Amino acid sequence: MTPSFFTECNCSMSPLGGSVVILAGCWAYLLVVCVSTGVDMCGRTVMVLVGRNIPVTLIAMEKALLYFIHVMDHITVKEYVMVYFHTLTGEHNHLDSEFLKKLHEIVDTKFKNNLRAFYFVHPSFRSKVSTWFFTTFSVSGMKQKVHHVETLQQLFTCILPEQIDIPPFVLEYDARET
Image 1: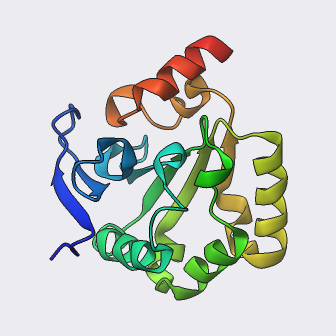
Image 2 (image 1 turned 180 degrees about the vertical axis):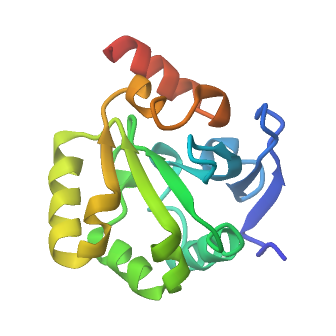
């Protein structure tokens, strides 16, 4: 059952037909998670997080955490990868390290063990430094799983373009910057 502060629906814009989680119903720009967007080159489920659309200052993060666990629970029973689009995020979209540490401590071991890669797309210098500190001192088991990906072409060496839903603004940004 979907908690009332989220709406789960079919992703009509997705050629792969994944389901999406949208905060507060009609706020289409607040797309947080696309479930089952496709598979990577090894056949593992690809999960997508869009950093720009995570309204950290507008939602109860503890409730969002619980819902994230609810959505991911059936995905994490087998190997999976996550793609995080950091493209054009602002300060109001950044999750703080204490929240991320709490997330890592709360989730079941299958979340950690079955995560094979975390692709951090379009990282900023600050996010690279933060990620290094976080994976070195707080969650060292994640360090070898995090991959900073500068361009979509680099991502496509691991995940075919037709196997991932990429927001239009990410495509536009990548075309401009590369």
